Length: 396
Image (cartoon, rainbow, N blue to C red; front, side):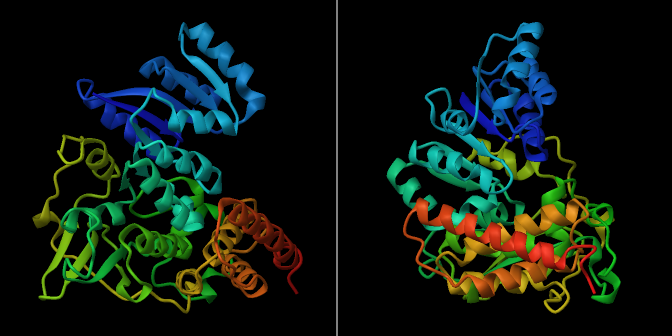
């Protein structure tokens, strides 16, 4: 019986995780649930799954959560704030942690789970983008397991012998991450001048949160995944390629030196990757519809348009620079996307903001968490200044 803590329980990854868990009550038990501010949704989940611990990240909402759970007759412990998230990730109540908190906010709890030796199911790509070497060191210290939940990295994991072998000894030539191309595949820079948040969040294949949907529209999501693949699989940038695959059926491929290419295919549903992580090395039923290749008929692939979608190129640039550059990239992107979703920044200015931040803040060695957190804060302040210059109402 796996005892599972779900951090980011009210988001899309959390919902898919809990759907899989509910299908296998003999295998999985939810022992901790955490959310950012969605008290009513968290209380509803606690009523259904009866965890030992419920955490709300916003301390101002702790009293409301306590009241709702008491009214529902749910006798679980309630806690709030950053320390409580760390406890949810590292306490003895769980052996498996689903790290699905969006953005840099999930970093400390993810590191805590790694240091505590948990099976870490990583959906928070920003944590490894910001602090890849620190996360790998924490995993080595704790002796736990890391299984990626991003469909692309989960696919690579499935296509590699042993999950994360030495790529050279395994005969791997390169990793190929697939990208749907998002809602704006094939459009030009001129076409994107007046994109609204609503259009950017209308992904053709996946149902996701607003931040990751915008990242998909800019191709930054794929850029973050390139950086993530570098750390997860110890692969240099020149051995990680991106191909646009609009059907989102092939989730990634691994090319070997003998000419073989292994791919993982499946309908675009995160429950496949999540179930693989929860049950690994076994496989369990997920509720995902079987893949009908005859109905699909064809699979298309094309090169990404790096001139129009600059964010992917900027991610490769930051990866090659190393050090704090990927932290700067991630922080600037988070600030720019938030401004865009708040109608304060044009869509095309997201990439401009990130590029100007990378130019203004040279990379430094990423020696410890304090250094990375300082780099993150510095990049956010720099991004906010740039956003004020480029923001809607300030364009010439």
